[in-house]
Length: 288
Image (cartoon, rainbow, N blue to C red; front, side):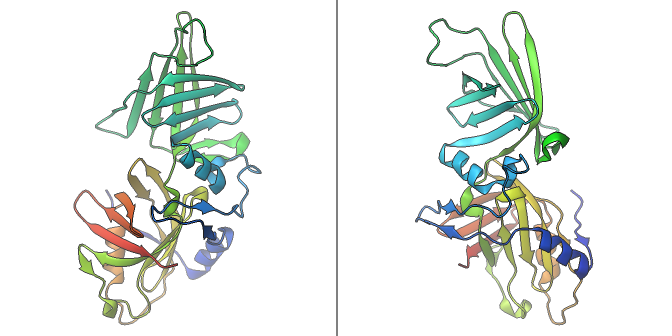
C-alpha cells in the first residue's frame, strides 16, 4: 500500500468543504449506539442515488440489510440480508433466494455468493432458479442516474433454459452510529499526549450520505471519502490544507498511520476503534 496523502491549498479545501453538507443532528441515541438520523441536506432521491440518502441507509440497517445493489436505468435492485436471504427485484417483481456463505478471492477483492434455492412463500410449485452475485471493490458509475457507488455488482439469474446477467453498483450498509464526530482518545494503547497537539486533538467526522469524512489533524483540516465492507472501513487518501503550525509534533505520525487505508472498525460504549492488520490501533470517543 502506498502511503501518501494529497496536500492541496486552503482555498481548494474551502471550496471542497463548501460543497459538503454540514454535520447532521442525531437523535434517539441508545446505550447500544443505534440512532435515527434527521433527513439529510442532500436529497438522494433527487439525484437517484441512495448512497447519498442517510435515511435510506438507516432503513436498510434497521431491516438487517448488509448490502444493497441496483441499476436505476435497468430497473433492478438487490438486497442481501445477512444469514437470511438474497432478494432480487426486477421491474417490481421480487424473487427471494436462500442465503449462502460468500467465497472471497485471495488475490483481489472479489466476493461471490451463489444460491440455488428460491424461497418465495407464494409459489405453489418450486422454481428452479439460481442466483450468482459477484461484488468487486471498485467504484461504479451509472451516468443516467448520477450514481457513484463504491462496489461494482453483477447478478446472474439462471433457470433451466436461460441465464441473464445484470450489472450495476452497490454499497455495504454502514453502522449508522458511525455518523458522528470522533476525537482521538488513544493511539496504540497510549493516551493522546495533548502537548503534541497544542491547537487541538485530532478528530474525524463521518457522514453516511455519500461516504464523506472530514477531520482535523492537529493543525490542518482534512476532507475525503470512505466506505465500509462488513466490519472494515476503507478511508480513501485525504485532502489537506497546507497550514504550518509551530510546535505540533504529532500531526505527521497521526496522518501516516491514518493513511494505512484499511481498518477493522468497532463501535462500543461511545468509542470508535480502528485497527489495522499490522496492529496499529486508534481509539476515538464521541464528543457530542
